[in-house]
Image 1 (cartoon, rainbow, N blue to C red):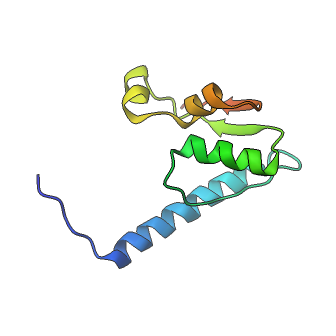
Image 2 (cartoon, rainbow, N blue to C red):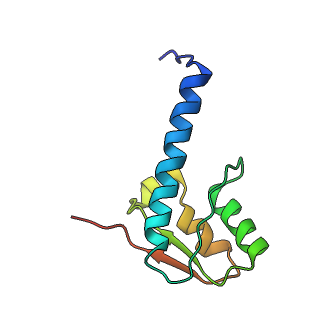
Length: 101
């Protein structure tokens, strides 16, 4: 299948919308935890690596991550942020299960 070449403006618009949606969702979750802060950044590293690096910079007491409820096969193929955090963090990590139904 041929790949489409998208105008940079369209890519930037989609990227900005995705970043805004992620930030809104993170703020919604942080509002449930007194004293929690939210930080949003762009990275070329694996997401879990970027989170761990930032947690080290700010000396985070706890890392909270959601799980998307991927099957074992999906998780293996797609990778897993929560899996990377749990297996590589030297800090406590709380994984909140995906809401079903």
